[in-house]
Length: 176
Image 1: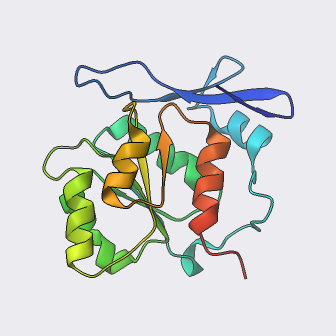
Image 2: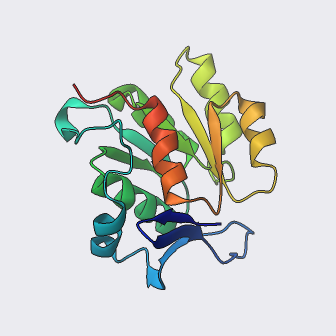
């Protein structure tokens, strides 16, 4: 699976870890996702309806994942596209932060220690809070898991960079 932007294929893919999840790595013509200069030159501002955003005036995207590599890569990609980003390593940490930061959208892993994605979503609803949630998981049943928690969408790992940006763009407020 890949996205083609000006002749460059970009796919977010991953090897399996001991717990079965996939930390991911983006491949662009054999270049790791860590080469963000190449990434931004070829895929910068893929969201045609989004003008450059001022970080201080927009609510952040919250990325919740217990895998530090995924957390950092997704955050770095989003920040390189101009999104403000807040990170949490589990559902409990995300719940503590969500009231303070009022995210535009939450990218939520489901299988995490301390508090998993199911419990996070349940607690969010119990508190009467609603934010768009995009489930982000390597599980084969990503769609079912998203439906179980009433998520607004899902991204099954591996996912295309363009899919990530477009999914967030649906919920992120347009530039003024």
